[in-house]
Image (cartoon, rainbow, N blue to C red; front, side, top):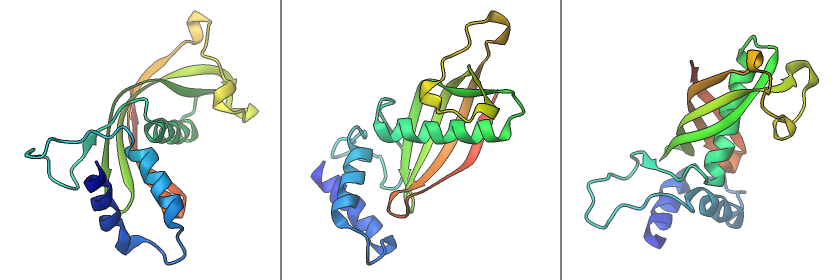
Length: 156
């Protein structure tokens, strides 16, 4: 695992700004890679390829929330949606962390105009208003720039 983190740090070194705090970066990498799948020593998994992640990983959950924000900003629904369940998560190291997520999202009781925190929004109880969607999100997070981008947000 230590060798993997060193490889990640070595791969990221060219993109780091000179004023980046190495301690903060190590903490971010530790958080993101805490539950990362580590292939056996003689595996055919290539560096830079997507690897499975634990769906309860804090980095995965944060990326899923960014995907939901993107969906909410682009939908015409009166209500906000939030993540119900993360079914599958993969991450790829490409100038940051690219998360590939299969997420189920559900309609909440919070209206968009209220601008409330999704954490305090409960799912719809009324049968007629309940709606669940299956989504695929690609979320690119660049921790050292504190930026996130959602190039793909597909829900049906």
